[in-house]
Image (cartoon, rainbow, N blue to C red; front, side, top):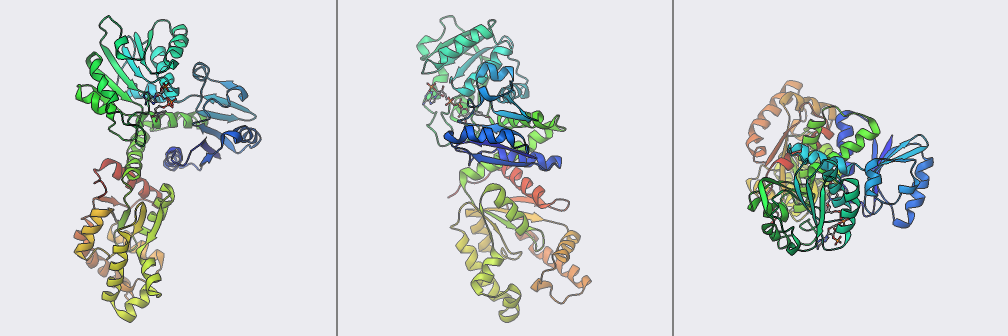
Length: 467
Ligand code: NDP
């Protein structure tokens, strides 16, 4: 079964990762891909989709949210009101359109137990997502919605939604001098502009203006932006005593809502949401600081397999120091050990390790003894992100036997001797491995489980900025 997301540019979309995780967690086999489609090719893409019966649906992102409206067999009331969609559901020879951003926004308020009914709301922006926010505010019975936007698009939303949701008082302002003269205390303020988003214009100065808005006690600030986690808008709001919430929950909920449209109810949605939140925060942190990830741990624990999976998922380069050593020495590790001894091997390993310190955005699997040199632990912890993969002695033994590789340190040993050697080496190296910032226990997990656990752990831990 195929699904995917189309847009342009699409390379940084988090949707493939979200859907890969959900499919993995639910044990389903879904081929979800990101499709880069140029504007002039979108009609052709849509026509082909109609005759390709392998797709269950698609997520639609910029610039196509308004493109297919007239080509669909059915659209939801939200799509009709907003003139934009983000989900296609392919049902036999029919294609239906939905807008699950609306659900993502509703669920964000629900997560804070924040009832919109009768609230006074202040909304920055009048673009596509601001309109979806305004729709939720109107539908849920807000008392007042003030839209702050520099262009007339604010007035267009006011005109449309005054008719659709007449119970709500709507007004558009383009400067703070136009704030309603009667002293309104706003209960909710939302940023639906890109100001303060990583890679876009700063919002520091713009959101100083929050001081000019009168707020009620317990007012909530919601920023749709999810990177950085703590935005300029949220910082300003918190400085004024408001509680704040970012856009990551909305991103996850709009995706889970797509899944439900395609495949039906989700069990354990709350747990999935929480896991996804940690994973996405991990991915976003890695994108921001671009550190390389070093995987350490005992031989056989699965560093190479996990490293490859992780690199594939993140679109990063994978390197295995043992392979680099073999390439540099033009000899197998077994031969290096038997011909030149362990200390010669460790010297080459050390020089390779130092070379990797200049790499960014790589996933590097370290040999099991690579961190024995104390200075190596230090430099790797400084310039990269060190992650310790652990497993119990028995599991390590099983994995080593299954891999059937010639491990120089265990060569020519009987089963009991091998087990004893593993135990001894583990005891010796444990304190070294435990210097890693992040530790993932892998006993009952497969490589994909470990990859997602690593990302979640990165999301949940403080990670030093790159030097
Ligand atoms: P649009 O481009 O459709 O709208 C942007 C709005 O911001 C417009 O109203 C625009 O004003 C205003 N704006 C842009 N630049 C400035 C500026 N320098 N000063 C003042 N106003 C400005 O964007 P979207 O609605 O699609 O997205 C807005 C934000 O929401 C993005 O940062 C996006 O990342 C985030 N988002 C988050 C989602 C999530 O799942 N968490 C989902 C969708 C969006 P004007 O009309 O005058 O041009």
